[in-house]
Image (cartoon, rainbow, N blue to C red; front, side, top):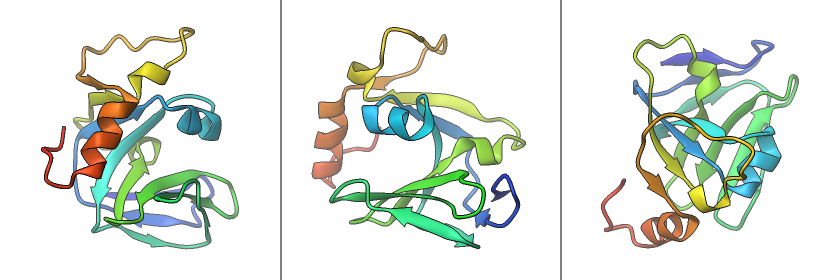
Length: 136
C-alpha cells in the first residue's frame, strides 16, 4: 500500500492489509484528539521524507511529518513493528475495523458501533510482554 502525509512530503509504503485496529489509550487520544485508528504495517515499512520521531515511552516511538504534522505511525522499538495511521490509507478498498484495544481507558463520550473483539490495557501489555503469546 502507498500513502502520503497531508502536504505530500512524506511517503509511506507498507504491506497490503484491510484490518484496522483502534487504540483508546489516553496517550493515543492525547496525541490525536481521539482514538488512534491504525493498520499493522509490521516490520516491512518504508518511510521517506521529513519525519520527526518522538520517544513516547521506553518501548515505543511515534512519528509525524515535520512539515504538516500528519501522524504517521507508532513503532514498537523491540520488534520494529509499525502501526500506521489508517487515515493515510483511506482510499484502500475493503478496510474493516477488526479490534479495539485499551477499551478500559475509553471515555464515555463516544462509542463505536462496530462489534469487534476488545482488549483491556492489561491484556495488551501482557500480550506484548510474552512474544510467544498468540496475537489477537
